[in-house]
Amino acid sequence: MTKICIYGAGAIGGIAGALLAKKGEADVSLIARGPHLAAIREKGLRIEGVAGNFTIKDIRATDNPADLGPQDYVIIALKTYSVAPILDQLQHLLHSETVVVTAQNGIPWWYCFGLEGALSNRRIPATDPGDLLWQGIGPERVIGAVIYQAAAIREPGVIDHMNGLRFLLGEPTGEITERAEQLSRLLQSAGLDAPVRPDIRSDIWVKLWGNLSFNPISALTGSTLDRITREPEVRALARQMMIEGQSIAEAFGTRFDIDVDTRLDQASKVGPHKTSMLVDLENGRQMEIDTLLTALQELAILADRKTPTIDVVATLLRQKARMLGLYPSGE
Image (tube, rainbow, N blue to C red; front, side, top):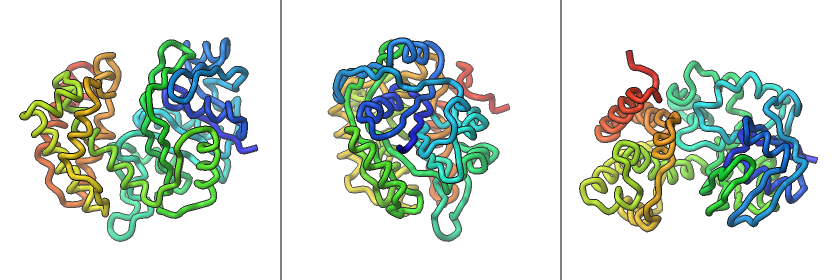
């Protein structure tokens, strides 16, 4: 039986792990910590929402990867800045053919792997300082993922799944491989919408297009999504950031199926939604500034694109985070 470990069984990782375990076609284990781990061990993992209401009991859950041994797939459902600190522990889960699925927002550390020409294998220091992930995981192991789910841990051991089942997969090289198709079959059988995509970078950009503007603006202003997209001055700021982001994406070969105003109108219909970056800020947690903005600035340099609006917003957000002790000092 295929062995799958969910490294980071929080809201998003917990849903995938619970659905896979419920289906029973894979040997599933979870890595969690603190009260959430304790609750899972004592009572099981409870999911409530669009995928159904159920509890998975007797699932292997630990905070020590050495307890589990090598896996066939490791789905990393941690924020990018949390991956480097667990690299040593991650090695316990890897054998020569282990596939690592990166389920994070923003520009991934492996972005230039498999590209042709001058950009081939270029590094993105903002998401992989010191080349630690490139060396410690290796881009050849990676399958990229883009996840569209809204979920939250209501209390330890209980996850509210508000909407979304999409779990897009794709090889950095664009190939449709058996390892990707096998994982797709398992996830789809478990109830997720998990096709293998031929251009996962374009899927990354479609999600990033909104995140690169809505998230930082919300963190700076405290605005919810409806206020950002409906108030003319703020909408114009978000629009310009998105246009600059689009120019970078297109330099890397991505094409957008909709225009920027349609994307803004779609976001407006979501209503008074708090972005993940605003929620992190309000809870005193580190924000995904480097993944969503700094990495974008680095790609802009590689692509020879100007991003004056993104640069200003990124500078302001980094300074705000520094003042709150949520970002390293620039000194």
